[in-house]
Image 1 (tube, rainbow, N blue to C red):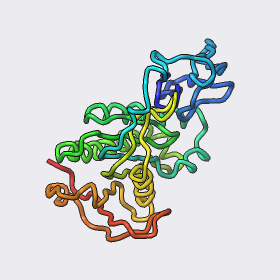
Image 2 (cartoon, rainbow, N blue to C red):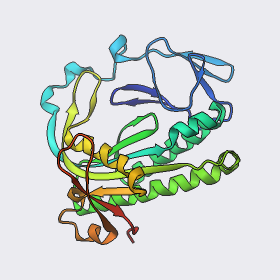
Image 3 (cartoon, rainbow, N blue to C red):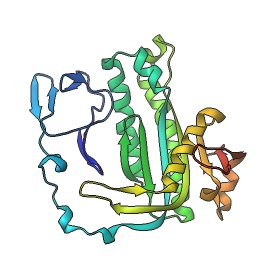
Length: 258
């Protein structure tokens, strides 16, 4: 699949049996395309043309937009990352790793679409998604998304059990949910995305899942004024995160919503 994302065009191998090559190298994770890249699928070679920064065009040009579109608004953020990806990359051959990551890409996108999330981008072994509505209904949808993505891990492990078990590996992800203000809109001619402290904090929270041994973490801001959410979580106490002087109150999702 070639997907137009906020920062250009990306090539995904969604677990093909024969695999695919980009400029002669096996594709295992999402790869950003640039003009002139050679994609090989089976015996067929394709040359990519279409990077807007190198002469290609979008359906609309940046001249059709204005910076007025950039606005600050409250959003719900979800960050999920494959844990132990370095070990997977070291122990699995590219032809073994590609279908595993491809399954995760495809199922993650399906789950996000099912629960009304906007996919901002895949970043190698990580995904960023968001909701532009912060109501309790959207927060519930975000929790259900995180739970469903945890089930995707179980599916990946079952589908590729023989490959993973042979090397004593398992496929796991961590996820974080946060609510905060972010700059949203067209940042440049090829960038339509989210920026701001809330986005950075969401990534920092996700990194805490390894330290705390928790699969899904949520911020106090995400739970604020949402009583049902509090009933699903347990406090992990204030935690220090990189880049912040003050500790951040963190909760772990311990119960799935009905």
